[in-house]
Image (cartoon, rainbow, N blue to C red; front, side):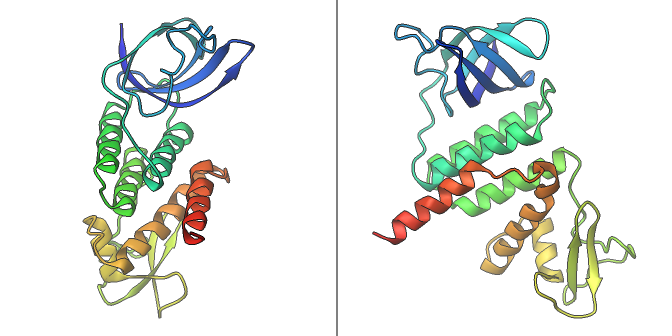
Length: 235
């Protein structure tokens, strides 16, 4: 059976092969060995790259399977600059957050949709926040933005709240550094990310909520994004 897939990570293996992490629509994340894929005349050379829509066949026992065949089903999704770093960030989230060999067909569709948005110049920050919120929800890590996690009372639009990881938002007696205003939380619940304040709040929440599941890993895409911004500022 052939599977729709994207490469999310690869590295050299032995002299001529690669270890390739792919995200498939039907079987989720898979770890594959692509034998001979680094040989000059291999039909796989140059094909096993991020953002190329692929159809793969693979099989074998255990967690590491053998790639039998791969073909591109469409031209590569073209990303450059900050959009490229954003696409790599999506790949890292999938790589670190999704359990291996577990189907996530809806996540696959949202991933492709988000990549397409990045290609047409959609504003990056809202695209990334939408994907992060979606991942948190799918994996069961989402929170209720409209209810106090301690008392169960509805969030007050004029009140201030602190986020408690893996629990939710709790009321504060007054504004504190890093606090969230109640009306921002209602906007986050509806993914209304138009205002700079709410967009900043969304980013802070995502970073904090994802941190326990990333287990302290430093994401390479973030480093590339920061490096790119510094490079542009020096021009």
